[in-house]
Image 1 (cartoon, one colour):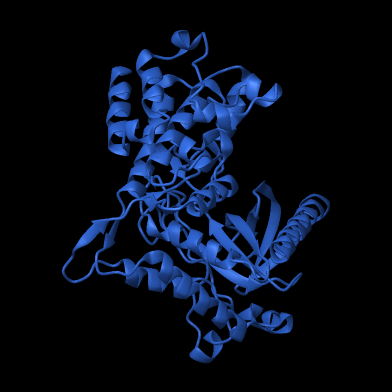
Image 2: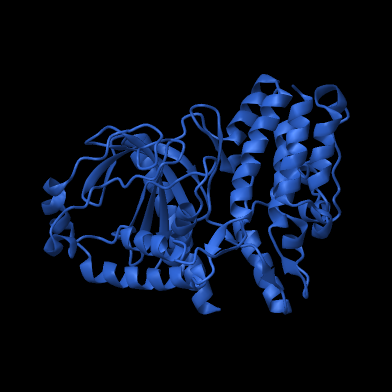
Length: 430
């Protein structure tokens, strides 16, 4: 209990540090800079924040390129580094035009404490996310054209299908365990090879130029998902031994693990996102939906055999899954059941509802202003369409939402059925 309290206090302290740094560096001192992997990045502003991380707009001083830089603090003694590297692994696992791709990653020693900091370099989507679009609609008293909304939803569903139908080599060991081993090795390597502040200054002149944009081809920089390392690493072995761990070892191991074996046999290993919501769907420059934020991603099918396992899953969901979009079985997990990818189907239903009506079906006046319980509303499936819904959107769209929002997961459709029904609605709007 004492150790848990200590970890909680450490986390709160780190969050306070980040909040203060974000305020002072990005408001009072717009020229704040950080150095990662021997490169200097200018922090322009804060793009967003979560319970354990901040996302900044960062610009490389050499090339002028801008990125979304996610900073995750990992206090000493916590599993934060392992969790962060699982997120990195998830970004690199799924390859789909509607799924965000990580550009680079780094694990460095926290100069303000005894823990580590994980940096994730992600593409910058200047159009923001679907929640931004919803907010814009609210401010201006407008709503999505139905065809455009269904198109965005369909692209999001295609991203989810890539996760629910992920194929892994049959001969490979469980990925989660191997990622843990990688993290342990990487952390050990980082400890051995940690640069002092003075050494980092000495290595600044060794920088290589960043790769320049080469269109949307795999291996070229693209907002639509090509994965490109931010730093070319072609130095001698003696210099490589001094570098901070930057995720490349983990990436190479993942490639080896996930490459099909010679017999070519694979099996479907479904993954669940577990935090699908409008705020986690970005819009690319050409208006395509891009699913992001894989910090909550897990192998989808989890057998619940004991009460302690059930409570652990509820606690995990409370920490990682946004309440108004969280599936009923994650609020009240039953012993003797199997959690699966149907949790994402519920979240998709909530997301489509929010696109149509500007809020989750369970963010009502009663739950937000009158002390009502979102959890009870979700568990009872207590939602309804606005009274003017029929004058705004088609019956097919309303039925599609209801199709996904079934309290009993066994009654919910799978992602293939959702996509088929979504395509039918889209065709009816032509």
